[in-house]
Length: 165
Image 1: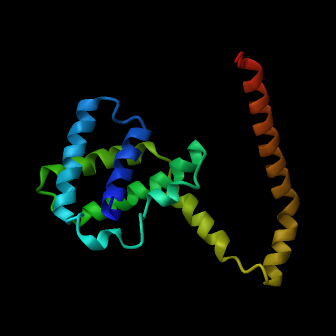
Image 2: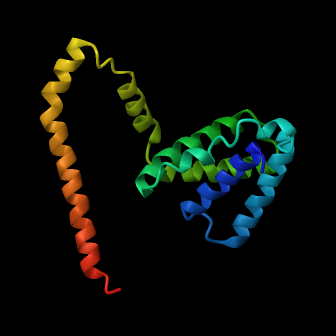
Image 3: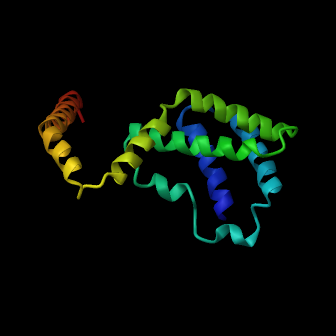
């Protein structure tokens, strides 16, 4: 499977994952649209496989549902950006764009969350002022971490008690 095919496969997975396409007729139509889009982009070209997949590999590390929604929101945005620069007079391009836009509205604002992660990665932890601020916030961060951990344990415990497996 080529890289472009992988990314179009991811598009299908995104749409199925969010339950947008429970109707197999809609999914079949979308697959036809994606096949036409593959032809538009000449996705069978040999260079497409260079470097491996661009989206599916990223999804492996995002395991929790809410985590996946964040990265999938970013991926949907990237598809919409890609399709912005294509020929919108083609029905299949319009259809895919409309479906992606509908999905985008149902997703959290992953862009804000991604920006937060990028900002954190840029912090200069060798800077004394940053270190002072970090130390001042350490107790609050640890409290949040403990609250989150306790909440997850409680949910797991309740889930195990309910399960009569």
